[in-house]
Image 1: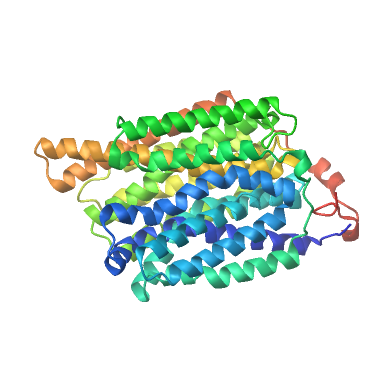
Image 2 (image 1 turned 30 degrees about the vertical axis):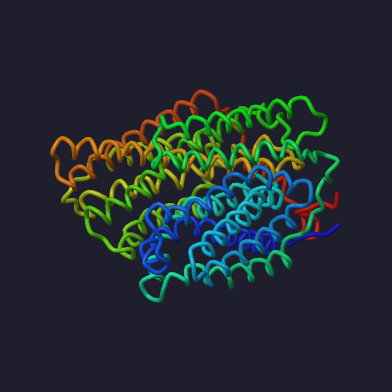
Length: 492
């Protein structure tokens, strides 16, 4: 049995969050470099989309499976394998001299990203079992998970303009190696519960196929349309595979994904809310970036800087205040105002004019969304993990990431398609190019705000309060001496 000092546990948290930041960055750091990559490797417009899609499809499809495999094999082991695959894939992307090499590298980066990120939240919850420390640790993780995208826009713009696009992948190499070394030194390797507890290979094939096909279908909606044969047929197949997986998990003795996890109203409700909230939030990050570039004429670095105030606010709340708010008011009460602020911020984005000015039209909604996300995400993650047993923590962590990524993919596909349809309609009616584009973005923001409003209703009606211990109870829970502290991982 091993013990970890308080300092070592916090260092372990920072190592895990560094790995998560690298993976989250890789989603958006590529976006601002896409025009340069297109010129360099000769991508067509439709082919260029696969630089992003080749990452998102395995990433969204493998999160649940990777989370459960982390429970079975050991979470640190799964994290390290994922880091290795991700870092090697980044090297392949950095060295890419043709389209196939880059798309292949992005696919394997998605595989490694899913394997590593699926178990991080589960390891954090196990590292910090005490409520106050856990709330603070989840605040750090929540900041990385939610603000990493905007950091990626800034870093991607800076690297692409200062050096070249290859460096957006090269930067992952030292980070990946240092993170793996830190994880080996600082994170205890708790053994998994073994394949006897749920090595369901047919179930794994069903859920992975369902999710990967679903993400592929969603990403193709903007090109093929909602009512196309491809969209309808592939959606139906994905749904049937998912239903078959659920039916199998309900009847076999050792399921890959124990359905008991979903009996918790907080687990089911928090993941649903997160999917809706991320869908709305992606509208701000992605369509907001397009508004800044296409309408206001910002370059890649200016787009990243424009989102910096929201990132700073998210970080200040997630790292400095979310733990105090959750301990004082409980995660449910902390969550609801945060979700409402995101909705108000999206409605303010729907008022941005063609001749917009940053201070007058953009700063206030960005700060509101930053306040809302910084408040809501740590509370959501606390609620989503509250019903998970130690044996299911990897699965619950994978589920949190799946609801975030799949919710974001669905939301972005819906909002982007609606924005494009509105823009085309406005152009057909004789509107100018910029006015038509802006009208499409406005519709997307309003729909995003509606999704966030639905999330608010679910938060009020479905979630149950999680009682937080009083200061006296917290004092009683503390060990008398540092060497009496419970180990972060027990040898099972």
